[in-house]
Image (cartoon, rainbow, N blue to C red):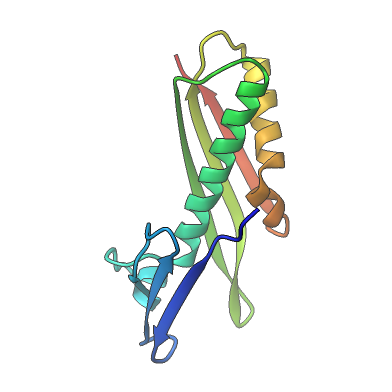
Amino acid sequence: MPEKLASVHWEGAGKTGKGQISTETGALKDYPYGFASRFGDDRKGTNPEEILGAAHAGCFTMAFAFALEGAGLAATKIDTKAAVRLVKDGDGFKIDRIALELEATIPGIDEATFQKIAEGAKAGCPLSKALASVPEITMKATLAG
């Protein structure tokens, strides 16, 4: 499997500096980030936690769709949110929780099967595995329809 690449360019000090994040696909191209978009109210930039949340939500959703397919089912709609919490930890910070919320419309599935497939996708997605050091990764799965 090929490696996926991302890069960052940063200029200046931690609190006053500015950075730009790029991905090889161009989905992010010199996208701004800095202290204000991470810890303040700057909504023009991004931050590592929301990028991590988007990646985790995307990975989990895809794992869920593949698991449904393996069970002979298909969703007509899957919506996932990920909330990543950054907290003070001594002189620094740490991520102490990621809360995933999944809502899906799946014809012909019962609640127990839905929950089992969702839990399996959460445990099995590569980003959940990579983030195993996060003390709390929760999931709320809602079957719509």
